[in-house]
Image (cartoon, rainbow, N blue to C red; front, side, top):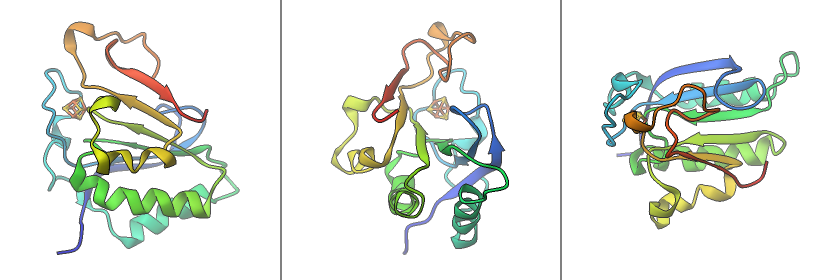
Length: 159
Ligand code: SF4
């Protein structure tokens, strides 16, 4: 069976999930089960809609649309770095960086950077900003930029 992934939501023009105006994809499937998760409906890998070739092309069209300039793409969820999702997203981000090298890629994940396995680390060369770690309710702080709780870390690899 070919690698498959579902997504919960796609925002073609988004200004709240990363810097600048962005395309944002919320993927389906997460196994971290954080207490107080803001998006429990995204835990199931079968939630939402299939991420198909048309959706992939839609995102590339939006990223290259000169009428509304996007700074880049945000991948969140769910967990984009769950290996099931990564199998689909790794070739996708490789395609994006080849077609639109000026666009940045932000990724939110419940894994910590230092616990990523060899496969998961393959996406890092294509990621400009990674926000890592589970949401921890006792460390929640609505005043934090780009993070839900203070344990999470913003890793700026390129920006
Ligand atoms: S990693 Fe994110 S989506 Fe997954 S359970 Fe935690 S807060 Fe929810």
